[in-house]
Length: 219
Ligand code: SF4
Image (cartoon, rainbow, N blue to C red; front, side):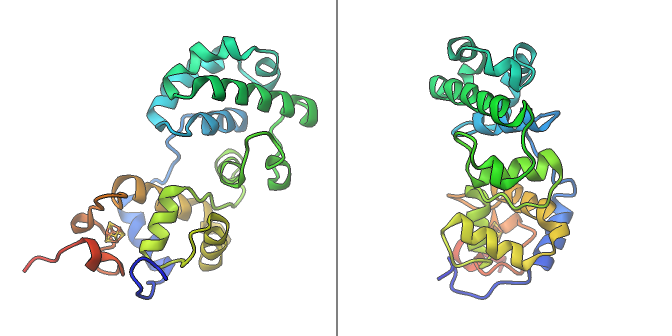
């Protein structure tokens, strides 16, 4: 069952409406290459993009690439990323990640899903973020926001991120995978909130099957 039990509106109509409220569906992590994006994505776990953006300039000044970070010690990294939380575990993780990239991929982040998911601590969602936003390769990253929005819009009946990814990919042309998934994510982050979705000011309120569960029409 979907969250509403009602049929989904077409995804192209949803994306057309979201293109009005989110004309520029850009990533909110500040990064200038795939390596920085990969590290920033790892740091964003249990943190916010704003916090990550505050620490990454200092981190990448000290460790500008995989080669530099692979030679660092977690204890050197810790003070640079402390604000993102879980900094001990994250420091170890990004040093191990850099080491694997350095040793197995010559210091370059590999632009293939099959390779990315072999890196330590890199799952399908992080790999998809790097493919889509680091390389411009069509991919659909499914995070908690995309999952919630997709279910509320009845775009999927699944709670499994891989199944949701497949469901979304099937419903949009490959050329829309990156912008479409970004719009769903940003819509979930700012409007279709987990606890109290802002249905009454949502551009999808007219077509959303979950509107009756959360919103109210003026009488
Ligand atoms: S109408 Fe409400 S539940 Fe539906 S997408 Fe908008 S905010 Fe989410």
